Amino acid sequence: MSVSHGSWTIEREYPHPPDQVFAAWSDPGTKILWFDLSGSADSDYRSDFRVGGTESFHMREGVAPRFTYDAQYRDIVEDERIVTTYEMSMDGRRISVSVATVELSATPAGTRLVYTEQGAFLDGLDDAASRRSGTTAQLDALATVLKERA
Amino acid sequence: MPPNVAGGCGSVLQTLENGQFAVKRARNLSSYLTIDAAATIVVQVLDSAATLDRAFRALADPSRRQIVDRLAAGPASVSELARPLPITLAAVVQHVQVLEASGLVESRKTGRVRTCSLNQDALRAAEQWLADRRSVWERRLDRLGAVLDEPARETDTPTTASRRSEDH
Image (cartoon, rainbow over all chains, first blue to last red; front, side, top):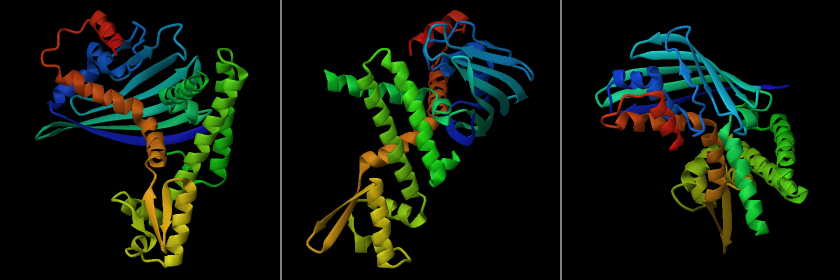
């Protein structure tokens, strides 16, 4: 059993006004378009965008490893701020619990977005925080081995 | 950033932990591959963990980061590296040795001059490690930009959403 803590910030500038950027987070149909990186999202993606409302994203049954994401909206300031807490699990095992803060501010060019995540990564950071990258490294190693054997 | 990056006992433990995960991964893989191939993967994962330990330990010093900074502009001799640093030449030589042991820097001796250069592959491995920790949200926010750029997005129905998500 182990816990590792991490915090990071990502900044982006978008050439669109804050209300449009905000809508891409608040509207479930738009959010799933960019949020799902797996290409194997379960069709049951749900987002109840209000303080206290929940959001859940699961990969389809049978996909391995199967990641699930369950969040709750904790604070919403229209066009300015969204704070959520979320947990991730992999094949039924909880791998992280995080606080995610999205801050939007208007710039002459559009919107500056600052995403900050503070997380507790449970029982093995390498398999938890890296999430997909661990799999990538594994598949790279597998590719190398298969190439050597060919 | 996890505390083990700075090195010391933590990084050794982390390496062992990585090893255990490597074994677990390899065991899962071994149902598809031969045990031999799975063992190769364990060695590769352990190797890369040890490489990262050395790289981050080497970078945990301001003088060594300044040396890396200078070498990013191109190869340089040890005395050239020493010039802007407020430390003795002997100390610079030691720092270069640590950087060489980490794999981040390579050096070649021509006559009496030792020329140092960056090993881009080793640097990339360290960079990749950091990038991987951010990649999920980096990629999401890139895609958010792409979604926002679509000029006239049709009304989003769940069908549209799942169809599009499968395109990627």
